[in-house]
Amino acid sequence: MSDISDSIAKPPVRKLKNAMPETPFKTFSWELQRHFAHVSGDFNPVHMDDVAARRTQAGKAVVHGMHLALWGLDRLIQEEKIVAPLAGFKARFTKMVYVEETASLAVVRDDGTQLTAQVRVGNVVVATLSVTRGPMLSLEASTPHADKEDSGNPVELKLEDLNGKSGTVAFSHDAESLFPAATRALGATRIQAIATISRLVGMVCPGLHSIAYSYQIAFAEGGEGDRALAFQVEEVDERFRLLTQVVWGGGVKGTVVALARVPPVEQRHIGEVAKFVAPEQFRGITALVVGGSRGLGELTAKILAAGGASVVITYAVGHREALAVCEEIRAFGAPPETKQAETMQYDVRLSAATQLKQLRVPPTHVYYFATSAIFRRVDGVFSSAVFEDFCRFYITGFHDLCEQLMKGRREALHVLYPSSVAVAERPAGLTEYAMAKAGGELLCEDLNRAQPLLKIHVARLPRILTDQTATTTDVETADALTTLLPLVQAPLC
Figure (cartoon, rainbow, N blue to C red):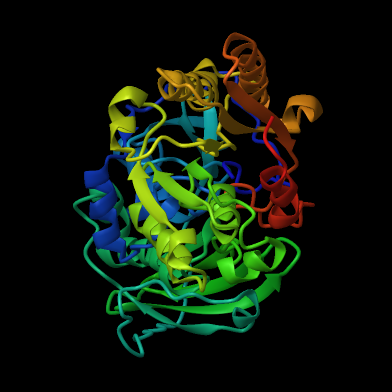
């Protein structure tokens, strides 16, 4: 899910007719990512682990939202677009920024009291910052202290666990090295407190399954001796999995709004799958399940194995996940000869000829579930770069695989090519995806005509709940097992 607030209304930001020029670009490298994690204490896997992040709506590791906000604030102060005294700032995030991407900052409004700027990747606005001029708040010293140090691992909470949750989060490290101008203007403790809000969201509340949505921070006098940030959850909106909490300490007071994202989707255990499959139904089949380490590919591998097929489960980066699927299959209570399963690393963007040398036995069947991240951040109606990436997965990568498997072949090769109802329904934001899938369907038709022994069956799948399609709001999805069973059980033409 590239749009992290697709169901939450928000007012548009009007552009200045004579907007100030953009500041220099900033590339959020892995080195910077690790530095901010160290400073803030936010080591959530969605930020630090590409493999783990692919099991989230992000698809791959994303930059900390507070890193973007503090960078923007630091740049505005450094370039003297805004000078002390400062009363506070707001940040709202609308799109995710991936590690190694480059962002820019542009001032779009300044009325003398409040300055508004946008963080952009290309022409896409990913965050909006508003900085308010004026005196700091006068508050009694709160001096919150951390009850105990956390383990360094993000907590995993259910939505119902968040109501009324409160506590304190210890500061991690000095942030001056990353944000020198903001530190000089506001003091080291306030910048540490602001950075710690990232730790609160990503590690404590909501914790492991979280997405930052917005911050509203007021600067306050005092608090220089604080070493922790206090928080209290005020409201949980279950419709949007949205929670609002107040924070205070270290010379700041504010409101934090975050989304409790849906946990990774777990496919059914093979023991449950086996209830719908005859034990000998797929005996004699040697199946290459491309993209079988998770999602629909994982479930397809379990259906086949439960029916006695030998399966080769491929993965691009999720080796540990592929091994777990194989171990589950091997542990299933069927005769040993009917539950053969092994893994193979295979990236459809690389040469098929080289990678297929790993196969010990030519497959009789191929189930093609290779995919890229479906929901993308796109500026406008169409992106050629996004389309080309989809084509590598759904067209050229598939063609290369089929071409290599058919070389010298004397027996039929049965292939399941999952397409999508998006080809006909054309949902907004999926133009490139639908175009690539439509192109894949045409390719399958032509391959079937050109290769008599190649039997490709194309199936347009409905939206099914997977890691990619999970959202923070209720969206109608089809049951994965009910959808896949007839496709796998029916003879592939």
